[in-house]
Length: 160
Image 1 (tube, one colour):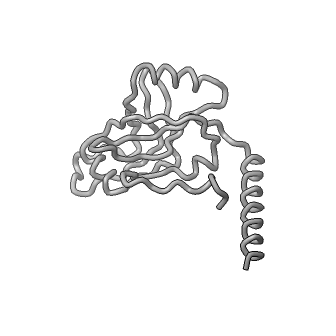
Image 2: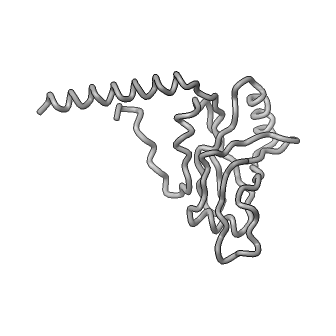
Image 3: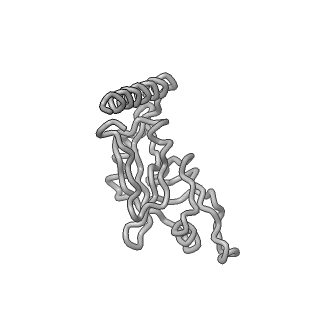
């Protein structure tokens, strides 16, 4: 891989990462938010049973909500399990919510979860303020990556 563009290694507390986000969106700014969960959801999260690829966040009525994140039901807590795809409240300061509301009201910007992790005993979600890429931008990025890989391969072969 080209220098500076290496994949980010998973941190020790990482539960899930959204690798599709960098392909689908241009990530402009990142924020950390707490995640309001029930007990069985935390257990399921610690077991790594979460999918965030189709997740997104919105600001509604002065509160931030996370949608499209699937946390599988925790087996031993069968009766207390909430619905797996329910919207979950994000814990942010009022100033951060107002700032994000102002930024997302701009045309084409959205909030995308990039990873879920534990920071001590607390479940956190990293949100990115993102602008969607067009299909031609994605194709161009793939061509550039392939060209860089071919150049690197040729240089490595030549050095033998």
